[in-house]
Length: 70
Image (cartoon, rainbow, N blue to C red; front, top):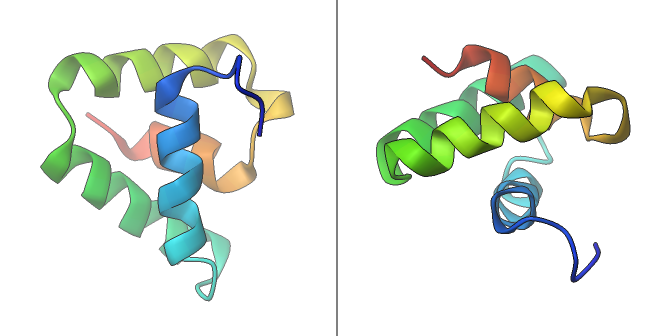
């Protein structure tokens, strides 16, 4: 984790840790559910933008969760 990393990525990576015991698809759904419930719409939008810009360098759970966000 880099200090230069955007806050949304740092936060979503912290959330993923809590769902690490789940298979990827279930973890992604749980992360997306958390983000949808608790994050401001601007933060959700920024997360999707970050994932869209560079999906190959991100955790697969982050990419899958972002794809589930409205």
